[in-house]
Image (cartoon, rainbow, N blue to C red; front, side, top):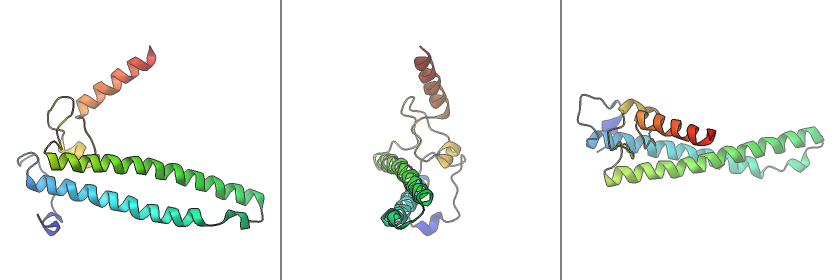
Length: 138
């Protein structure tokens, strides 16, 4: 499917769930998201290569080092997100994308739109979180 066919397209509950067009839409959404993250990481590399030792004021140097540490933590989270994006694309390829890993039921289009890497339906996610809370409280 051509990306131009997807420009103004929004998945709808009125059509067959995870049809070719919906799969192409979510693949493009995931690939665009991944590309944005990769582009942002190039900026991070440039920022990290700036030499903070040239800053005369110790407070400025400490602030710059703190900014770099925050940027590295952010990039680490995004690295993990890229692996989730890649996993979602693999699910598109193997025909399991959009279906809850716990129940096998379809994940709502609204949830996939908001969180295209979702692997659980909202109900299964809530049950999982309740179970985690119960386990932590013990």
